[in-house]
Image (cartoon, rainbow, N blue to C red; front, side, top):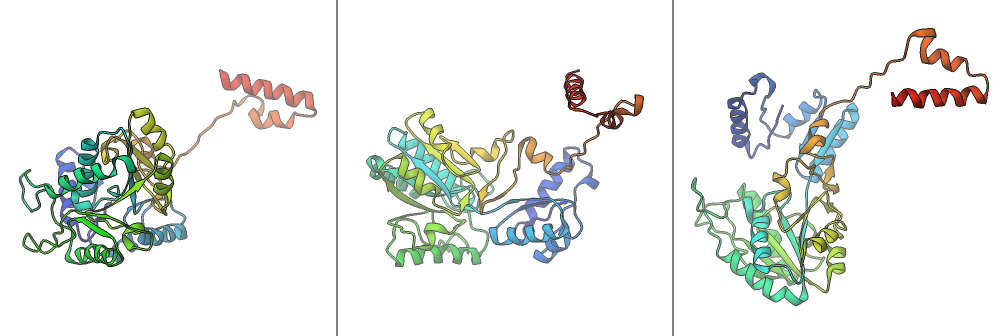
Length: 337
């Protein structure tokens, strides 16, 4: 049973139609629509909960599941970092960041929102990325010629714009974007790039969930790793470096459930490996074998030989250490064969 967000009902209906067309028995998948009270009621009846959403709601889901002692998994918010070091292809990194930050208008839990760029290449990378972001085509169309569309609602637009404006009022620089595009529709915003952000500004620590990226210059990889890990979230990360070996070494030090080398969003389409978060980004994993097995309960069935009362009768015959050691040797041999 699936209950999508009340803001995105049609995509869930389409997914249901496609699965039925692919051969799924319609009785095996139900889509239920409604507000949060519908979700709360569902938790009272199901055997497992796989929740994707904000951290605040995730806590409520965890409490409700714990009261019934049913298992659950949570994929929650993110403030995903990207690291760009000297020696990386700046054109490729800028192109990758444009996809990772602005795809789906930044409304993805794995979107990149923080970028740590080595000082020696910071200015050049910033120039290329600003140029790339400023060239994106905004709008709405069923065709493939649009680079970025609308935010989900006018309320969310106000939230994203407010976060950007409060940061700018506190001293952040808007390098690109930062404006609503009401000429395109009620909930459009330009791809936005900020610099000069400090920890006191809302855009530094809070998940924006919109097309807003903050650039930070760093001395070296160690500082980039330290700052990237300085977050209550830990969902996804991206690393661009001189070589794959260096990038993988950095990725292994990042406190995230996933890290991608030379890409930003690849993890979502890599269905054979697990995906999920650490810290306040969630519990459990989707995709891969782990993503399927989380919906199951393991049952162990073991059998003993029946002759002479079986294993339990053997335990009763242990009268000394010699007999205990003999039984252990027999059990080890039994397990091998």
